[in-house]
Image (cartoon, rainbow, N blue to C red; front, side, top):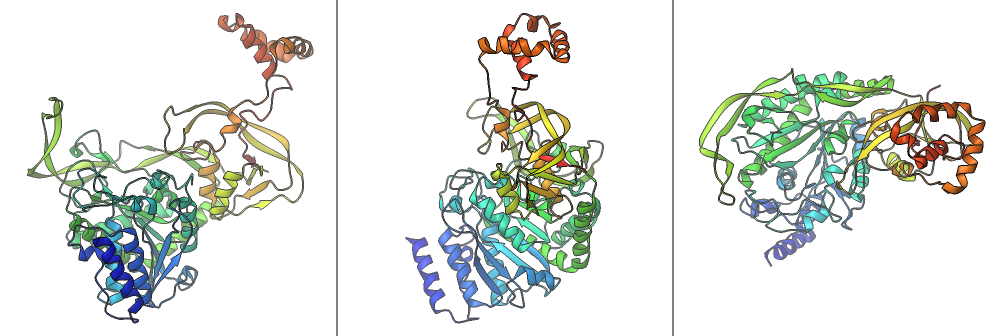
Length: 577
Protein backbone atom coordinates (compact mmCIF):
# COMPACT_ATOMS: atom_id res chain seq x y z
CA UNK A 1 0.00 0.00 0.00
CA UNK A 2 2.94 2.38 0.59
CA UNK A 3 3.47 3.39 -3.12
CA UNK A 4 -0.28 4.12 -3.42
CA UNK A 5 -0.25 6.24 -0.26
CA UNK A 6 2.81 8.15 -1.54
CA UNK A 7 1.13 8.73 -4.91
CA UNK A 8 -2.10 9.97 -3.27
CA UNK A 9 -0.08 12.34 -1.13
CA UNK A 10 1.66 13.74 -4.20
CA UNK A 11 -1.63 14.20 -6.03
CA UNK A 12 -3.22 15.97 -3.03
CA UNK A 13 -0.16 18.23 -2.82
CA UNK A 14 -0.46 18.91 -6.56
CA UNK A 15 -4.06 20.12 -6.15
CA UNK A 16 -3.31 22.44 -3.26
CA UNK A 17 0.23 23.65 -3.97
CA UNK A 18 0.43 27.41 -4.54
CA UNK A 19 2.95 28.70 -7.04
CA UNK A 20 6.53 28.77 -5.69
CA UNK A 21 5.50 27.09 -2.42
CA UNK A 22 7.78 24.85 -0.40
CA UNK A 23 8.22 21.63 -2.33
CA UNK A 24 8.01 18.16 -0.81
CA UNK A 25 11.09 15.99 -1.16
CA UNK A 26 11.60 13.92 -4.29
CA UNK A 27 10.46 10.26 -3.94
CA UNK A 28 14.07 9.02 -3.90
CA UNK A 29 14.90 11.21 -0.89
CA UNK A 30 11.89 9.86 0.98
CA UNK A 31 12.99 6.30 0.23
CA UNK A 32 16.12 6.46 2.34
CA UNK A 33 18.49 6.23 -0.61
CA UNK A 34 17.59 2.72 -1.78
CA UNK A 35 14.23 3.13 -3.48
CA UNK A 36 13.36 4.38 -6.93
CA UNK A 37 10.07 6.02 -7.81
CA UNK A 38 7.27 4.14 -9.53
CA UNK A 39 5.98 5.40 -12.86
CA UNK A 40 2.85 7.07 -11.39
CA UNK A 41 4.99 8.72 -8.71
CA UNK A 42 7.41 10.03 -11.33
CA UNK A 43 4.75 11.67 -13.50
CA UNK A 44 2.85 13.04 -10.49
CA UNK A 45 6.06 14.62 -9.21
CA UNK A 46 6.86 16.25 -12.57
CA UNK A 47 3.30 17.58 -12.68
CA UNK A 48 3.86 19.00 -9.20
CA UNK A 49 7.05 20.75 -10.37
CA UNK A 50 5.20 22.14 -13.39
CA UNK A 51 2.54 23.60 -11.11
CA UNK A 52 5.10 24.94 -8.65
CA UNK A 53 7.31 26.92 -11.00
CA UNK A 54 6.99 28.86 -14.27
CA UNK A 55 10.55 27.76 -15.07
CA UNK A 56 9.49 24.14 -15.68
CA UNK A 57 6.91 22.99 -18.22
CA UNK A 58 5.84 19.36 -18.62
CA UNK A 59 4.65 18.45 -22.11
CA UNK A 60 2.87 15.33 -23.34
CA UNK A 61 4.61 14.03 -26.45
CA UNK A 62 4.23 10.96 -28.67
CA UNK A 63 2.86 7.46 -27.95
CA UNK A 64 4.64 4.37 -26.66
CA UNK A 65 4.05 0.64 -26.94
CA UNK A 66 2.85 0.78 -23.32
CA UNK A 67 -0.18 2.87 -24.26
CA UNK A 68 1.08 5.80 -22.18
CA UNK A 69 2.57 8.92 -23.80
CA UNK A 70 6.14 10.04 -23.42
CA UNK A 71 6.60 13.23 -21.42
CA UNK A 72 9.14 15.99 -21.88
CA UNK A 73 10.10 18.45 -19.16
CA UNK A 74 11.53 21.79 -20.30
CA UNK A 75 13.45 24.01 -17.87
CA UNK A 76 14.98 27.46 -18.36
CA UNK A 77 15.58 30.33 -16.00
CA UNK A 78 13.43 32.73 -18.01
CA UNK A 79 10.47 30.35 -18.15
CA UNK A 80 10.58 30.01 -21.94
CA UNK A 81 9.30 26.54 -22.82
CA UNK A 82 10.01 26.52 -26.56
CA UNK A 83 13.25 24.94 -27.83
CA UNK A 84 13.05 26.95 -31.05
CA UNK A 85 13.16 30.14 -28.96
CA UNK A 86 16.03 28.71 -26.89
CA UNK A 87 18.07 28.32 -30.06
CA UNK A 88 17.05 31.79 -31.25
CA UNK A 89 18.34 33.11 -27.90
CA UNK A 90 21.64 31.25 -28.54
CA UNK A 91 21.25 29.14 -25.43
CA UNK A 92 23.08 25.84 -25.19
CA UNK A 93 20.46 23.07 -25.11
CA UNK A 94 20.95 19.76 -23.27
CA UNK A 95 18.58 16.78 -23.50
CA UNK A 96 18.69 14.10 -20.78
CA UNK A 97 17.09 10.70 -21.38
CA UNK A 98 16.20 8.49 -18.42
CA UNK A 99 14.94 4.97 -17.88
CA UNK A 100 15.61 3.49 -21.30
CA UNK A 101 16.46 0.42 -19.19
CA UNK A 102 14.28 0.89 -16.09
CA UNK A 103 16.38 -1.62 -14.18
CA UNK A 104 18.98 1.15 -14.38
CA UNK A 105 16.96 3.94 -12.75
CA UNK A 106 19.81 6.15 -11.51
CA UNK A 107 19.04 8.92 -14.00
CA UNK A 108 15.32 8.86 -13.18
CA UNK A 109 15.93 9.72 -9.55
CA UNK A 110 18.95 11.96 -10.13
CA UNK A 111 16.92 14.10 -12.54
CA UNK A 112 13.99 14.44 -10.14
CA UNK A 113 16.34 15.41 -7.28
CA UNK A 114 18.08 18.01 -9.43
CA UNK A 115 14.88 19.51 -10.82
CA UNK A 116 13.42 19.62 -7.31
CA UNK A 117 16.40 21.73 -6.22
CA UNK A 118 16.22 23.93 -9.33
CA UNK A 119 12.53 24.63 -8.78
CA UNK A 120 13.04 25.17 -5.03
CA UNK A 121 15.90 27.57 -5.74
CA UNK A 122 18.57 25.64 -3.83
CA UNK A 123 20.33 24.87 -7.14
CA UNK A 124 20.82 27.05 -10.19
CA UNK A 125 21.90 26.80 -13.81
CA UNK A 126 23.46 29.58 -15.91
CA UNK A 127 21.11 31.75 -17.96
CA UNK A 128 22.76 30.63 -21.22
CA UNK A 129 21.66 27.00 -20.64
CA UNK A 130 18.30 25.31 -21.25
CA UNK A 131 17.44 21.77 -20.16
CA UNK A 132 15.08 19.10 -21.48
CA UNK A 133 14.34 15.80 -19.70
CA UNK A 134 12.53 12.63 -20.73
CA UNK A 135 11.43 11.45 -17.25
CA UNK A 136 11.02 7.79 -18.28
CA UNK A 137 11.62 6.57 -21.82
CA UNK A 138 10.77 2.88 -21.35
CA UNK A 139 7.40 3.22 -19.66
CA UNK A 140 6.42 -0.43 -20.22
CA UNK A 141 9.60 -1.65 -18.56
CA UNK A 142 9.09 0.81 -15.69
CA UNK A 143 5.56 -0.50 -15.09
CA UNK A 144 6.87 -4.08 -15.16
CA UNK A 145 8.40 -3.66 -11.74
CA UNK A 146 10.06 -6.30 -9.56
CA UNK A 147 13.06 -7.10 -7.38
CA UNK A 148 14.66 -9.87 -9.45
CA UNK A 149 15.68 -8.01 -12.61
CA UNK A 150 19.35 -7.06 -12.88
CA UNK A 151 20.52 -9.90 -10.66
CA UNK A 152 23.28 -8.90 -8.19
CA UNK A 153 22.76 -5.16 -8.73
CA UNK A 154 23.31 -3.25 -5.48
CA UNK A 155 19.90 -1.56 -5.19
CA UNK A 156 17.42 -0.12 -5.36
CA UNK A 157 14.92 -2.45 -3.68
CA UNK A 158 12.68 -2.82 -6.75
CA UNK A 159 12.90 -1.51 -10.30
CA UNK A 160 11.73 -2.11 -13.84
CA UNK A 161 12.70 -4.56 -16.58
CA UNK A 162 14.94 -4.06 -19.58
CA UNK A 163 12.44 -4.94 -22.30
CA UNK A 164 9.63 -2.56 -23.24
CA UNK A 165 5.96 -3.56 -23.53
CA UNK A 166 6.74 -5.52 -26.71
CA UNK A 167 9.98 -6.85 -25.17
CA UNK A 168 12.27 -4.73 -27.33
CA UNK A 169 15.54 -3.40 -25.98
CA UNK A 170 14.93 0.25 -26.78
CA UNK A 171 18.64 1.00 -26.89
CA UNK A 172 18.92 -1.15 -29.99
CA UNK A 173 15.97 0.44 -31.78
CA UNK A 174 16.79 4.05 -32.56
CA UNK A 175 17.61 3.64 -36.25
CA UNK A 176 15.23 0.79 -37.11
CA UNK A 177 12.33 2.23 -35.06
CA UNK A 178 10.26 -0.91 -34.58
CA UNK A 179 8.65 0.67 -31.52
CA UNK A 180 6.38 3.64 -31.01
CA UNK A 181 8.95 4.88 -28.51
CA UNK A 182 11.63 5.22 -31.19
CA UNK A 183 9.36 7.13 -33.56
CA UNK A 184 8.24 9.38 -30.71
CA UNK A 185 11.85 9.92 -29.67
CA UNK A 186 12.69 11.09 -33.18
CA UNK A 187 9.93 13.67 -32.82
CA UNK A 188 11.26 14.81 -29.44
CA UNK A 189 14.86 14.92 -30.65
CA UNK A 190 14.06 17.06 -33.68
CA UNK A 191 11.76 19.26 -31.60
CA UNK A 192 14.45 19.93 -28.98
CA UNK A 193 17.41 19.85 -31.40
CA UNK A 194 19.88 19.37 -28.53
CA UNK A 195 23.48 20.50 -28.71
CA UNK A 196 24.35 17.92 -26.04
CA UNK A 197 22.54 14.63 -25.44
CA UNK A 198 22.99 12.47 -22.31
CA UNK A 199 21.40 9.01 -21.91
CA UNK A 200 21.77 7.79 -18.31
CA UNK A 201 22.60 4.09 -17.75
CA UNK A 202 24.08 1.59 -15.26
CA UNK A 203 26.90 -0.80 -16.20
CA UNK A 204 27.61 -4.39 -15.21
CA UNK A 205 30.66 -6.55 -15.83
CA UNK A 206 34.00 -6.41 -14.01
CA UNK A 207 34.40 -5.14 -10.47
CA UNK A 208 36.51 -2.02 -9.85
CA UNK A 209 36.71 1.05 -7.61
CA UNK A 210 35.26 3.62 -10.06
CA UNK A 211 31.66 4.69 -9.45
CA UNK A 212 31.05 6.25 -12.86
CA UNK A 213 32.20 5.34 -16.37
CA UNK A 214 31.36 7.16 -19.58
CA UNK A 215 30.70 6.38 -23.23
CA UNK A 216 31.29 9.42 -25.43
CA UNK A 217 30.39 9.62 -29.09
CA UNK A 218 33.46 8.08 -30.69
CA UNK A 219 35.59 11.00 -31.85
CA UNK A 220 36.93 9.23 -34.97
CA UNK A 221 33.38 8.52 -36.10
CA UNK A 222 32.30 12.10 -35.45
CA UNK A 223 35.20 13.23 -37.60
CA UNK A 224 36.31 16.71 -38.59
CA UNK A 225 36.03 19.71 -36.28
CA UNK A 226 33.49 17.97 -34.06
CA UNK A 227 35.65 14.89 -33.53
CA UNK A 228 38.64 17.04 -32.66
CA UNK A 229 36.64 19.11 -30.17
CA UNK A 230 35.22 15.98 -28.53
CA UNK A 231 38.65 14.37 -28.15
CA UNK A 232 40.70 17.43 -27.23
CA UNK A 233 38.25 19.59 -25.26
CA UNK A 234 34.86 18.12 -24.32
CA UNK A 235 35.92 14.76 -22.90
CA UNK A 236 38.96 16.15 -21.01
CA UNK A 237 36.80 18.98 -19.68
CA UNK A 238 34.18 16.60 -18.26
CA UNK A 239 36.87 14.38 -16.74
CA UNK A 240 38.43 17.39 -15.00
CA UNK A 241 35.09 18.66 -13.67
CA UNK A 242 34.29 15.23 -12.26
CA UNK A 243 37.78 14.97 -10.75
CA UNK A 244 37.13 18.28 -9.00
CA UNK A 245 33.97 16.72 -7.53
CA UNK A 246 35.91 13.72 -6.23
CA UNK A 247 35.27 11.20 -9.02
CA UNK A 248 37.91 9.28 -10.96
CA UNK A 249 35.89 9.09 -14.16
CA UNK A 250 37.04 6.54 -16.75
CA UNK A 251 35.76 5.37 -20.15
CA UNK A 252 33.14 2.60 -20.07
CA UNK A 253 34.97 -0.63 -19.22
CA UNK A 254 34.36 -2.36 -22.53
CA UNK A 255 36.01 -5.62 -21.55
CA UNK A 256 33.98 -8.76 -20.97
CA UNK A 257 36.37 -11.57 -21.90
CA UNK A 258 39.25 -10.73 -19.58
CA UNK A 259 40.06 -8.62 -16.54
CA UNK A 260 40.30 -4.86 -17.24
CA UNK A 261 44.06 -4.75 -16.64
CA UNK A 262 44.51 -6.01 -20.20
CA UNK A 263 43.00 -2.75 -21.45
CA UNK A 264 40.05 -2.32 -23.78
CA UNK A 265 38.80 -0.50 -26.89
CA UNK A 266 36.46 2.42 -26.32
CA UNK A 267 32.92 1.57 -27.32
CA UNK A 268 32.00 2.23 -30.95
CA UNK A 269 28.34 3.16 -30.88
CA UNK A 270 26.38 2.72 -34.11
CA UNK A 271 23.00 4.32 -34.92
CA UNK A 272 21.02 1.52 -33.27
CA UNK A 273 22.12 3.07 -29.96
CA UNK A 274 20.88 6.42 -28.66
CA UNK A 275 24.26 8.14 -28.77
CA UNK A 276 25.07 6.72 -32.21
CA UNK A 277 21.73 8.00 -33.48
CA UNK A 278 22.28 11.46 -31.97
CA UNK A 279 25.77 11.66 -33.49
CA UNK A 280 24.22 11.39 -36.97
CA UNK A 281 22.82 14.86 -36.28
CA UNK A 282 26.13 16.39 -35.12
CA UNK A 283 25.05 16.33 -31.50
CA UNK A 284 27.63 15.80 -28.75
CA UNK A 285 26.35 12.61 -27.15
CA UNK A 286 27.21 10.74 -23.97
CA UNK A 287 26.10 7.62 -22.14
CA UNK A 288 27.00 7.66 -18.44
CA UNK A 289 27.31 4.17 -16.93
CA UNK A 290 27.39 4.01 -13.13
CA UNK A 291 28.76 0.76 -11.67
CA UNK A 292 25.98 -1.58 -10.59
CA UNK A 293 27.92 -2.95 -7.61
CA UNK A 294 28.09 0.45 -5.91
CA UNK A 295 25.30 1.46 -3.46
CA UNK A 296 22.29 3.02 -5.13
CA UNK A 297 22.52 6.36 -3.31
CA UNK A 298 26.16 6.70 -4.38
CA UNK A 299 25.25 5.97 -8.01
CA UNK A 300 22.40 8.49 -8.03
CA UNK A 301 24.67 11.19 -6.61
CA UNK A 302 27.35 10.43 -9.21
CA UNK A 303 24.75 10.72 -11.99
CA UNK A 304 23.50 13.99 -10.50
CA UNK A 305 27.04 15.38 -10.31
CA UNK A 306 27.87 14.30 -13.85
CA UNK A 307 24.77 16.02 -15.24
CA UNK A 308 25.81 19.20 -13.44
CA UNK A 309 29.30 18.82 -14.94
CA UNK A 310 27.80 18.68 -18.41
CA UNK A 311 25.92 21.92 -17.72
CA UNK A 312 29.04 23.59 -16.33
CA UNK A 313 31.14 22.65 -19.34
CA UNK A 314 28.40 23.47 -21.86
CA UNK A 315 27.82 26.89 -20.32
CA UNK A 316 31.51 27.77 -20.21
CA UNK A 317 32.18 26.53 -23.75
CA UNK A 318 28.84 27.51 -25.28
CA UNK A 319 30.27 29.55 -28.15
CA UNK A 320 32.82 26.86 -29.05
CA UNK A 321 30.21 24.10 -28.95
CA UNK A 322 27.72 26.00 -31.10
CA UNK A 323 30.40 27.04 -33.59
CA UNK A 324 31.79 23.51 -33.79
CA UNK A 325 28.34 22.04 -34.40
CA UNK A 326 27.59 24.62 -37.09
CA UNK A 327 30.89 23.79 -38.82
CA UNK A 328 30.19 20.05 -38.59
CA UNK A 329 26.73 20.46 -40.13
CA UNK A 330 28.24 22.40 -43.03
CA UNK A 331 30.95 19.73 -43.41
CA UNK A 332 28.27 17.06 -43.87
CA UNK A 333 26.30 19.17 -46.35
CA UNK A 334 29.33 19.85 -48.55
CA UNK A 335 31.11 16.47 -48.16
CA UNK A 336 31.55 14.53 -51.39
CA UNK A 337 32.05 11.11 -49.82
CA UNK A 338 31.25 9.34 -46.55
CA UNK A 339 32.73 6.33 -44.72
CA UNK A 340 30.34 3.44 -44.07
CA UNK A 341 32.44 1.47 -41.58
CA UNK A 342 35.13 2.11 -38.98
CA UNK A 343 37.87 -0.27 -37.83
CA UNK A 344 39.79 -0.16 -34.54
CA UNK A 345 43.40 1.00 -34.98
CA UNK A 346 45.23 -1.28 -32.54
CA UNK A 347 48.47 0.67 -32.95
CA UNK A 348 47.05 3.75 -31.21
CA UNK A 349 46.04 4.00 -27.57
CA UNK A 350 46.24 6.25 -24.55
CA UNK A 351 47.30 5.21 -21.02
CA UNK A 352 44.68 5.34 -18.27
CA UNK A 353 45.08 5.02 -14.52
CA UNK A 354 42.70 2.21 -13.67
CA UNK A 355 41.64 1.63 -10.05
CA UNK A 356 40.65 -1.98 -9.72
CA UNK A 357 40.49 -4.95 -7.39
CA UNK A 358 42.82 -7.92 -7.74
CA UNK A 359 41.27 -10.75 -9.71
CA UNK A 360 41.84 -14.45 -9.15
CA UNK A 361 40.47 -17.90 -9.80
CA UNK A 362 38.90 -20.29 -7.34
CA UNK A 363 36.74 -23.43 -7.61
CA UNK A 364 33.12 -22.73 -8.52
CA UNK A 365 30.57 -23.82 -5.90
CA UNK A 366 28.32 -24.82 -8.80
CA UNK A 367 30.61 -26.64 -11.23
CA UNK A 368 33.78 -27.15 -9.23
CA UNK A 369 35.71 -25.62 -12.13
CA UNK A 370 37.85 -22.46 -11.88
CA UNK A 371 35.82 -19.24 -11.82
CA UNK A 372 36.75 -15.56 -11.85
CA UNK A 373 36.39 -13.45 -8.70
CA UNK A 374 37.53 -10.02 -7.49
CA UNK A 375 38.96 -9.42 -4.03
CA UNK A 376 37.80 -6.05 -2.69
CA UNK A 377 40.29 -6.33 0.12
CA UNK A 378 43.05 -5.92 -2.47
CA UNK A 379 42.53 -2.64 -4.33
CA UNK A 380 45.22 -1.51 -6.75
CA UNK A 381 46.06 1.21 -9.26
CA UNK A 382 47.59 0.36 -12.62
CA UNK A 383 48.13 2.10 -15.94
CA UNK A 384 46.26 0.29 -18.74
CA UNK A 385 45.94 0.90 -22.47
CA UNK A 386 42.63 2.20 -23.80
CA UNK A 387 42.28 2.14 -27.59
CA UNK A 388 40.24 5.05 -28.85
CA UNK A 389 41.09 5.54 -32.54
CA UNK A 390 38.99 4.01 -35.31
CA UNK A 391 40.00 4.28 -38.96
CA UNK A 392 37.24 5.07 -41.48
CA UNK A 393 36.81 2.60 -44.34
CA UNK A 394 34.39 1.59 -47.11
CA UNK A 395 33.89 5.10 -48.45
CA UNK A 396 30.98 5.86 -50.74
CA UNK A 397 30.63 8.81 -53.09
CA UNK A 398 27.68 11.04 -52.29
CA UNK A 399 25.07 11.10 -55.08
CA UNK A 400 23.21 14.20 -56.12
CA UNK A 401 20.05 12.58 -54.74
CA UNK A 402 18.47 9.24 -53.87
CA UNK A 403 15.18 8.03 -55.28
CA UNK A 404 12.92 5.58 -53.42
CA UNK A 405 9.77 4.18 -55.05
CA UNK A 406 6.70 5.01 -53.00
CA UNK A 407 5.92 1.35 -52.31
CA UNK A 408 8.68 1.23 -49.70
CA UNK A 409 6.56 3.23 -47.30
CA UNK A 410 8.08 1.77 -44.11
CA UNK A 411 11.41 3.32 -45.04
CA UNK A 412 9.81 6.56 -46.20
CA UNK A 413 7.88 6.76 -42.92
CA UNK A 414 11.13 6.61 -40.93
CA UNK A 415 12.80 9.22 -43.12
CA UNK A 416 9.88 11.57 -42.63
CA UNK A 417 9.90 10.97 -38.87
CA UNK A 418 13.47 12.25 -38.90
CA UNK A 419 12.58 15.35 -40.90
CA UNK A 420 14.60 14.31 -43.94
CA UNK A 421 13.96 16.79 -46.72
CA UNK A 422 12.36 14.98 -49.65
CA UNK A 423 9.84 15.64 -52.35
CA UNK A 424 7.47 13.51 -54.34
CA UNK A 425 7.93 13.42 -58.11
CA UNK A 426 5.18 15.45 -59.76
CA UNK A 427 5.21 13.47 -63.02
CA UNK A 428 6.18 10.05 -64.30
CA UNK A 429 9.86 10.44 -65.13
CA UNK A 430 12.62 8.61 -66.98
CA UNK A 431 15.95 9.10 -65.19
CA UNK A 432 19.43 7.65 -65.52
CA UNK A 433 20.45 6.23 -62.15
CA UNK A 434 22.99 4.01 -60.43
CA UNK A 435 21.76 1.04 -58.45
CA UNK A 436 23.14 -2.01 -56.67
CA UNK A 437 22.55 -5.63 -57.61
CA UNK A 438 23.00 -7.82 -54.55
CA UNK A 439 25.38 -10.66 -55.41
CA UNK A 440 25.85 -12.18 -51.97
CA UNK A 441 24.58 -11.76 -48.43
CA UNK A 442 23.98 -13.74 -45.27
CA UNK A 443 21.50 -13.40 -42.42
CA UNK A 444 21.85 -14.26 -38.76
CA UNK A 445 20.45 -17.65 -37.80
CA UNK A 446 19.06 -16.37 -34.51
CA UNK A 447 16.71 -13.40 -34.22
CA UNK A 448 18.08 -10.20 -32.78
CA UNK A 449 15.66 -7.53 -31.57
CA UNK A 450 12.88 -8.67 -33.87
CA UNK A 451 15.10 -9.15 -36.94
CA UNK A 452 17.53 -11.50 -38.62
CA UNK A 453 20.06 -8.82 -39.62
CA UNK A 454 21.72 -9.11 -43.01
CA UNK A 455 25.41 -8.94 -43.76
CA UNK A 456 26.09 -7.71 -47.27
CA UNK A 457 28.89 -9.68 -48.92
CA UNK A 458 29.07 -8.11 -52.37
CA UNK A 459 27.16 -5.98 -54.85
CA UNK A 460 27.50 -4.94 -58.47
CA UNK A 461 26.88 -1.31 -59.40
CA UNK A 462 24.86 -0.82 -62.59
CA UNK A 463 23.74 2.26 -64.50
CA UNK A 464 20.60 2.47 -66.60
CA UNK A 465 17.68 4.70 -67.47
CA UNK A 466 14.66 3.74 -65.43
CA UNK A 467 11.04 4.76 -65.17
CA UNK A 468 9.81 6.33 -61.96
CA UNK A 469 6.22 7.10 -61.12
CA UNK A 470 4.53 10.24 -59.93
CA UNK A 471 4.67 10.05 -56.13
CA UNK A 472 8.05 8.33 -55.90
CA UNK A 473 10.36 10.13 -53.51
CA UNK A 474 13.47 12.13 -54.40
CA UNK A 475 15.88 12.90 -51.55
CA UNK A 476 18.42 15.66 -52.32
CA UNK A 477 21.85 15.30 -50.72
CA UNK A 478 22.49 18.94 -49.82
CA UNK A 479 20.86 18.94 -46.38
CA UNK A 480 21.76 18.55 -42.67
CA UNK A 481 20.34 15.00 -42.73
CA UNK A 482 23.05 13.83 -45.18
CA UNK A 483 24.77 11.48 -42.76
CA UNK A 484 21.51 9.99 -41.51
CA UNK A 485 20.53 9.34 -45.14
CA UNK A 486 23.87 7.75 -46.03
CA UNK A 487 23.94 5.44 -43.01
CA UNK A 488 20.37 4.25 -43.52
CA UNK A 489 20.14 3.98 -47.31
CA UNK A 490 23.61 2.74 -48.28
CA UNK A 491 23.23 -1.04 -47.81
CA UNK A 492 26.84 -1.60 -46.70
CA UNK A 493 26.51 0.75 -43.71
CA UNK A 494 26.60 -0.92 -40.28
CA UNK A 495 22.98 -0.15 -39.35
CA UNK A 496 21.45 0.44 -42.77
CA UNK A 497 17.83 -0.38 -43.51
CA UNK A 498 19.13 -3.24 -45.67
CA UNK A 499 20.90 -4.69 -42.62
CA UNK A 500 17.65 -4.39 -40.62
CA UNK A 501 15.61 -6.34 -43.22
CA UNK A 502 13.46 -3.49 -44.55
CA UNK A 503 14.33 -4.48 -48.13
CA UNK A 504 14.19 -8.28 -47.71
CA UNK A 505 11.32 -8.74 -50.21
CA UNK A 506 13.78 -8.13 -53.07
CA UNK A 507 15.82 -11.12 -51.91
CA UNK A 508 13.07 -13.59 -52.74
CA UNK A 509 12.40 -14.50 -56.36
CA UNK A 510 8.68 -14.07 -57.07
CA UNK A 511 8.40 -15.23 -60.69
CA UNK A 512 9.29 -18.82 -61.58
CA UNK A 513 8.81 -21.26 -64.47
CA UNK A 514 7.70 -24.80 -65.22
CA UNK A 515 10.80 -26.73 -66.14
CA UNK A 516 9.16 -28.99 -68.72
CA UNK A 517 7.70 -25.95 -70.54
CA UNK A 518 10.74 -23.70 -70.33
CA UNK A 519 13.04 -26.42 -71.72
CA UNK A 520 11.62 -25.70 -75.17
CA UNK A 521 11.14 -21.95 -74.69
CA UNK A 522 14.64 -21.51 -73.29
CA UNK A 523 16.30 -23.62 -75.98
CA UNK A 524 14.60 -21.63 -78.73
CA UNK A 525 15.58 -18.31 -77.12
CA UNK A 526 19.17 -19.50 -76.57
CA UNK A 527 19.68 -20.09 -80.31
CA UNK A 528 19.58 -16.38 -81.03
CA UNK A 529 21.67 -15.28 -78.02
CA UNK A 530 25.26 -16.28 -78.65
CA UNK A 531 26.64 -14.30 -75.71
CA UNK A 532 24.56 -16.37 -73.28
CA UNK A 533 25.60 -19.55 -75.11
CA UNK A 534 29.22 -18.58 -74.46
CA UNK A 535 28.54 -17.92 -70.80
CA UNK A 536 26.76 -21.28 -70.51
CA UNK A 537 29.67 -23.15 -72.13
CA UNK A 538 32.11 -21.45 -69.77
CA UNK A 539 29.98 -22.44 -66.76
CA UNK A 540 29.76 -26.03 -68.04
CA UNK A 541 33.49 -26.42 -67.44
CA UNK A 542 32.46 -26.90 -63.83
CA UNK A 543 31.87 -30.66 -63.57
CA UNK A 544 29.09 -30.51 -61.01
CA UNK A 545 27.27 -27.83 -63.00
CA UNK A 546 27.69 -29.82 -66.22
CA UNK A 547 25.95 -32.82 -64.59
CA UNK A 548 23.04 -30.75 -63.25
CA UNK A 549 20.37 -30.19 -65.92
CA UNK A 550 18.12 -28.09 -63.68
CA UNK A 551 20.99 -25.78 -62.76
CA UNK A 552 21.76 -25.20 -66.44
CA UNK A 553 18.11 -24.51 -67.22
CA UNK A 554 17.96 -22.06 -64.30
CA UNK A 555 21.12 -20.37 -65.61
CA UNK A 556 19.45 -19.77 -68.96
CA UNK A 557 16.27 -18.50 -67.30
CA UNK A 558 18.18 -16.00 -65.18
CA UNK A 559 19.91 -14.64 -68.27
CA UNK A 560 16.67 -14.41 -70.21
CA UNK A 561 14.17 -11.50 -70.42
CA UNK A 562 11.66 -13.57 -68.39
CA UNK A 563 13.75 -13.36 -65.23
CA UNK A 564 12.33 -10.62 -62.98
CA UNK A 565 14.55 -7.57 -62.90
CA UNK A 566 13.49 -6.70 -59.34
CA UNK A 567 15.09 -9.82 -57.82
CA UNK A 568 18.13 -8.76 -55.77
CA UNK A 569 17.93 -5.22 -57.18
CA UNK A 570 18.36 -2.85 -54.27
CA UNK A 571 15.43 -0.44 -54.64
CA UNK A 572 17.19 2.76 -53.60
CA UNK A 573 18.50 4.53 -56.66
CA UNK A 574 21.36 7.01 -56.86
CA UNK A 575 20.96 10.07 -59.08
CA UNK A 576 24.51 11.05 -59.93
CA UNK A 577 24.08 13.56 -62.76
